[in-house]
Image 1 (cartoon, rainbow, N blue to C red):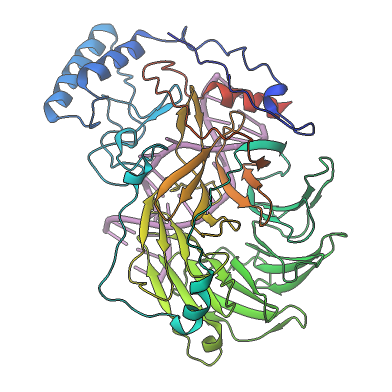
Image 2: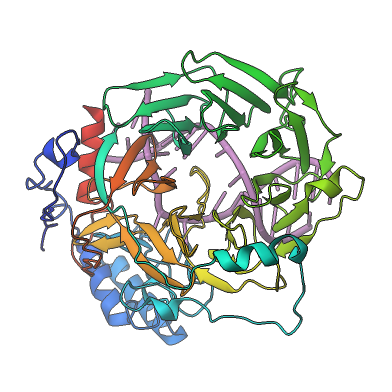
Length: 544
DNA sequence: ATGTTATGAGGCC
DNA sequence: TGGCCTCCCTAACA
């Protein structure tokens, strides 16, 4: 049985960079799995091949099931009296097993596809699983509705048309790890933000409410402020670019203002002034954004309400306004970069909604537009330059793009199937625009399911061209086996910061970009190895 | 090495 | 509406 191959990819690095693979011997492989292989395991392998578990469709016919069962039982009876058949952890069936085989994950064939949610196949054969070379087939075609509805036309139409370039420049992908802060935070990272004016400063928040400040141009200059919040730090925002003050929101129900130099923070707003009165009464703030023109802060809580206040006078401007279904969490807020009175919100009620702040205060609290999704909307963002497009990330494993917010909003212009449907314990995935792309079409988002790269199970960071639905690049790092759900592109430089578990990675473009996926499906190898080799090494390294 | 646990949303009654 | 159960590629720590 072949063992996993060592990492052979060569990479150039800067002097200051940290490379995990420099710190351990990648060619010395862990041993041991082969010896433990029981007859039973071999039998399961054989049977899977016989039964066509690995067939094209990933389906099993009824007769095959029956046949498998009887052979199975016959064998078990002949050897032992107590049945200890291995069952599928998903459906508890006994004739197959879901899970990793080497670096390739096999789904339970009896469940709908984990990627596109449709029955009849698994993720391995899913037609929506985007290969880099042939990605066009992955996205659904442009949709046009006959019912063209004009929305926000009065704001955008004239100003924006001339600003949209006709020639699309080549994308520049930061696909090579430049430097890393391993275990910088004590809990998983929940948000990242580049300082808008201080070069090389990256701010990060974690699940515990701690704020991290890292000058990545000087590797050693990093600070953690521990007492900014008491639980999940959800957002970091600036009101003025040259300010040394940041505004943060948290699941502790507060919005804080923190001085970056001193770490002194003050509460601007606290939805839980009486402390903990049980989970039913606890309020959390997930959405936060600022209206740059007016210098206002907008925050939204877990019960569907929006709060507007002036951070200078620390006065609430209006009563809390219900902008999503009562009792449902508002997950995100985003002010339009071109017209900051236009607000985009998204929430657990499966909607993203567009609002005009000028109409909110006058008691006319109906939204301009409601964008329906099939499940929870993790994020919704206006495009960074013109604000005329919207990208949303929903838990139904689809990224939706609305192309022109002053035209047809009935349906998204494009739906891209992409794996970001997570169960608990992860920071929600959010597709974000590349602020440097003049065509406003490139987005970045981490991927949940693994891909097999030269025998390594890795979670890539995907760059997708929303104009075509094409997967432009999938960025991986052999030393990063964890999921990178927080990804932030630098507003000016060709850099990306990504938060993966407790570590932060800074990525830069490779001189010669090699975007071709090095994929090897090694069905049948390393059958017993649940955790891949690189994962084990990463764990070892972190324990040092 | 293996078990535990942090936790959220959907679905059912 | 609320309580209870379930859940598929986690990650870190006992």
